[in-house]
Image (cartoon, rainbow, N blue to C red):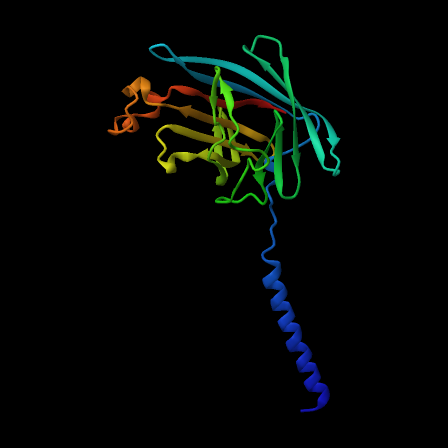
Length: 263
């Protein structure tokens, strides 16, 4: 074989090997990362109705207090941290009735980069979504704080964030909230400790996000029991763990938050 022809064939072979190696290392091209599930823009706002139930240990049983309120979150401004990251300043408003004027409740911040969407509230940093958005993906959404920390509900301390693990249950599915239909929604499970068979503590939390809209709904159940009210403290014979959680909860809370309107 002439020398020039052999050199040419060798060059083609090397080029083939390099192209194969490049395709293996680069991986598939991702066209849709799902950033639109967490839209951030000054002027955007969301209004929600919130139904809450608080369980409080009381003499002779458990006191249950339920109420409805309304919240509004408005992206009012932007700011930069010392790394140059852009954060969106959100003013949160609250009222107990839809006929009452809004009252400022708190200020929080939101951020989004190529890897994650973040919510900073009450000095706690939550990773709400990770990108690209894909069903089955999991992460530690509470990695930036100690999940053993306690919160106080009706004067009772609770390890609210124990055993939380975030996971995308579904992506790109339809959903209906308060009569409004959305055709592209991602469902995120923040916590579900039922697989641990822990009949003394329930940690259950789920959120839904719609493309180009943001948070649609949030549902949280943080319930504890000592089986005292339902079963006289007996945790051995299976009676307490066999009861529905609604019949054995002694302290904690539930929250159901649903979108009413947005702009």
